[in-house]
Length: 384
Image (cartoon, rainbow, N blue to C red; front, side, top):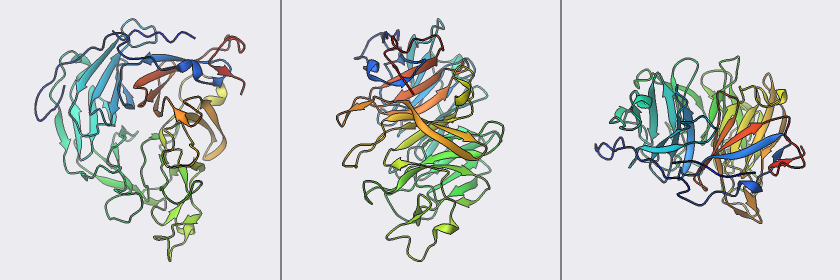
């Protein structure tokens, strides 16, 4: 495997920033030769110059937009020669408060920044000289504990925005939910409740049904409660937090007098503390048929478990509303309890390749499949 890569603001209290093109090999390359994938799959570096890479979005011209958390930046990645690797990485915004979420619609890029939703108009035509960001929403909760937000436009044209619980475990009005709004911030409506912290959601192909990951609470035990994969079947549904976890476990404090039967259980328990973040349905045609329509889920990895869990990308195969299998797609980000990478988000490209962001390594990877690849010679492969 050849990990070579060719990689060559917005608002800082109202200051317009110029785009910055990253030089080639500006940082150490991630050791992707350690990754294990099923036979026929291959992982390559799309860009290794995206510090703290988090959520992903794609523009009409196939610009890849990447949010960040601690870096406070938004990046634009362009593959100018169409060889499957980003040639240029630009910083199109910086100095923001946890701008994790990015969502592209009608030529504009929407960015979440805790209490704000910002928009960069006509961004793909202005990458070299990014426009000043407009503030669309300024009155979301300002707490930074679970205040970073994955955002996305739904099939109804609405912008969906999660409001995470501002705590490990608590019961506060106005939090632990997903809401939606018009692109200009008007017409807000609560969609679902009892959601501790979702940092990834998508709509099942062929339906208008929203699926999302949710992170379970900490400090209960090594193996409780599980992170969840959920589906919204009706507006106003309640998924249990903080009263009931993983559909069957009452919280020792907030579950008193409650009944888990009154809340919607997860369709899949993902494992305790795996930190399931980004998830997308695979809508491409490059991967084998068994992957089409499956949910691809990035597990960022545990931080408070005696033996670490997560640090991988998983596949949940789905038939209708039923999960029929759950197995690894990418492993090897961790060895001997030490990680070199932490997957955050996934994004299906128009050609069917899959992008995966990694905030620890500051990179974005490109996952491809070819039936012609030899199992014995492909270092990034493993037998399923």
